Length: 243
Length: 264
Image (tube, rainbow over all chains, first blue to last red; front, top):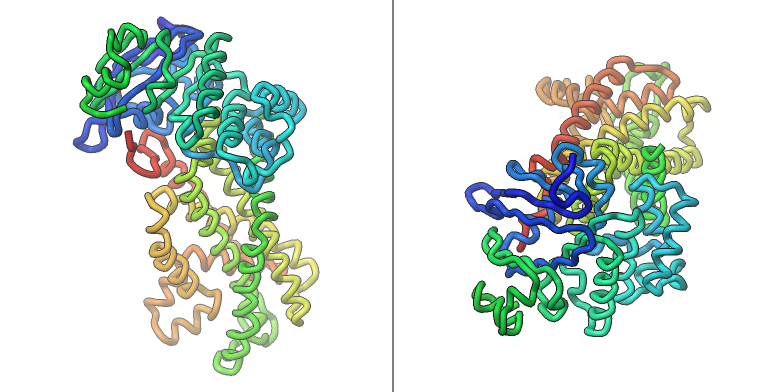
């Protein structure tokens, strides 16, 4: 079963309601392999609902999601294998070491210990975290914890990476390093969906989705979407909210 | 194979968490010991017990309540584990578990087996202390009780899972605990046999008789004395399967398992 983006992320006519309130009303977009896409939306726009649907924490009564060409609705387990997720909430056990946390995650994906340790070493090295493998997460600062989350999300070689406001609460230098790293991942072929409030994390060449009140307001490269105005101003003018 | 890898990891994580929370272990041990040493001493004279199966002789009250206190450890741990699930859900670790590409029922069962293993460790520690205190069972009873503890642990853990799927916020949990743990414990055969209850009220006796916790207590009691209580085992198994099914249903993503409404 293939979709228009057989190696990326494809969402067609996705809708979800909480009782009478529409959280998402028929959203569609298509991200090919290697695309970095920023998802910008004010609070209540439906970003969290979209992420919950993409990660199958919720199941949509309407619409389809394809992850790397696999239908999440009909073959959820195969689809989830292709998905890496950095949640907004911390997922690390503070009392365990970085290595123990990552081993736990690898095992949840059925990766045997020896293979897992090799992957962990590689993922940590890429994020300059190799020497912290044995440290307890509790002793890490916010930036290192986020990097660990990112390493975790990449352990099983996903094809699509979702990040839900991954830089919230981090200092400017750390934010910029993580943003640059994830852009580099897109260059290596990963499809990235990056939800954010922070327009300075979005580059002009990035693909941009603006979500507002459960609908896709605008889509295109950030440069085209913003026109001549700075992105933050443009966002404010179309949604009535400061980014 | 990947199922077993995940099972080992989930159980292993429970052990590691347990090792890091020694105060939880102490608290879990102190609670039944207080009942055994203080409560039982006070009630020893008040509660005369006749000879009922599996006992073949008159027993002291401390002997009577040990199986109920073993089951109490399973009950409290099952609930505590589900409380940590509600907490995990507010954090992200529950999301991590539920977005694994393994079947959700298996992930939930793995979590249950992990918490049950910890409970059983605590029960054996309690039985060890009780033995030092002078309350001993037939030696093979300590082995025979293991399957009963597994069944009871999974059943009460599944009950906790069901509750945690219904409870949306951590703050609501304390109230539910009071409405679940205490009635289940007191309306059971943990502290007094059914015939004692019947002397006061047949309605209460009937409630005790159908309480799933009673089946756990009796299964444990009989197993400790190397006897098999078929009725308690059958009812316990039925309750376990029913609660497991409810827990899997409670965590079905199609039902909208969410810690809280989506924020943005």
